[in-house]
Amino acid sequence: MPYLYTEAHKAVDGLPMIRAMFLEEENAYTLGTATQYQYMYGDNFLVAPIYQDTNADDQGNDIRNNIYLPSTADTWIDYFTGEQYRGGQVINNFDAPLWKLPLFVKNGSIIPMYENHNNPSAISKTNTEGLDKSRRIVEFYPYQDSSYDAIEDDGISMTQNSDGTVDYGSNVKTHYTSSVKGTTATLTANKSEGGYQGYDANRHSTFVVNVSEKPSKVTAINGSTDINAKEVTSYEAFEKAAKNNEAVWFYDESPNLNKYAKDDEGFKDTAIITTPKLYVSFTKTNVNEQAQTLVIEGFKNDADLGEETLNKDLSTPANLTAAEETKTPTSITLTWDEVEDATSYDVEADGIIYNIGNNTTFTHEDLPYHSTHTYRVRSRNIKGYSEWSKEYESISLEDPWKDTPTPENITWEGDIYGSHTPDLAFDNFFQSGDGGFHSDGNSIGQALTVDYGKGYQLDKVEYYPRDDASNGTVTKMDVYTSLDGKNWSDAKSFTWERSADMKEIPLKLQLVILNLFLENLLETSSLQVK
Image 1 (cartoon, rainbow, N blue to C red):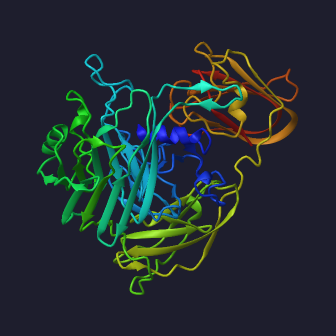
Image 2 (cartoon, rainbow, N blue to C red; image 1 turned 180 degrees about the vertical axis):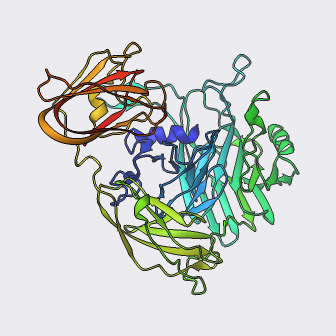
Image 3 (cartoon, one colour; image 1 turned 60 degrees about the vertical axis):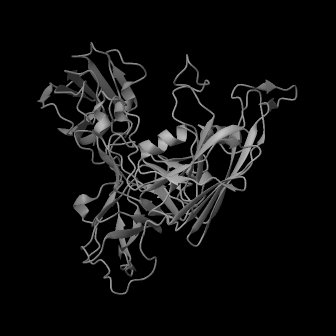
């Protein structure tokens, strides 16, 4: 909460808490729509929600593609696993089980926290799950030199001034710093400044430090005094000693972040194992009078991402190509030959580098219709990367709607659900779930009349049900045609199995008005007439 509260406080006169990616790094890629499904949460977190089914199993476990990691950080860290990624690239095939929100933190971040609580009111005998401000927890991702200014106040004061400004009352500011020099990391909570009604400066502090191996020495200092922190051998022992105001530390080689699931929840058995953490408990002190400093010798926080240099012994992937049968109007799927000793591959698509892991296929999505794109691919391993392949050019397929006339008038005899009007069946967007034309529950046997205003030589009507083939999927349709809206052809009946597959209705005739008599209908999705 202290991190979120600080970011909210900063947002009053600065950038919003939730930020479009171009506010973090402005370039041609972030100024387009490529990063529309991710955002920055304050200065230090990047969130990339799961917004579509990419390759989900029957339990909802999926992967996330097209996560852009800005070059504003040398490395980004998966908050839940500790895995590190280079900045300045797009990552694909990111593992996203049902429980996991893709969440990244900048290396070098400092995140102030409190103990877990279920409401922001002060903890008490009658509010046992409230907020306890007497213990501050600060998580560090030490990298080079970094800092963070946390702001704390009473959480309720707000006065509207006559000049339109807002006064949020008194507050407390704490300047945190992190500095890595060689194999020594120095982490400091400087003296807090300020106060507010009800503020108690006597705090017990816990530093949580992300590391990759056990340090050789840990020194915890209150003010200028070494408090002689002792090592304990379990997290449970650490927490017990910390709550007893003892100076202790614990190195956890395999932390399990799943600490809050209840005993009767099946999720309790799911282990969320992350990279090592060092926990250090300081004895209570007046934080307005004394800084608290942690010195870690033998510090290492290295994911060993491999050398960022040319590896002349690593072969360049061969046979980069895009098969015509795998293309769509908005996507191009590339393949190439596997390279011996390669552990991952980079694809450069229109100048943007995508890291796709150990896969030999890549789908470039959300492309304009019939657009030209250039690609290169290279292989990687711990010793560096190969030469880029020769540039390959490919063109997405043509506009699928280019031969589709636009109706002048659409009439539906039945009622509709909400604002899901019948024109949504002809808007050139395929329906996902309930997103398109949606009638009410009493519409079986009602007529949908489509007036094109002119005579056309039409080949077919294509019916695209909603993508989950759920309620409203048409299984029987009677089709009539007319040139004047008065004299109609005999009905042609079509019956299909219930599925999300496209259904084709052959026409080969001239018409002005098309009448679709829909049976077993609650809604329909897209109708494409050619």
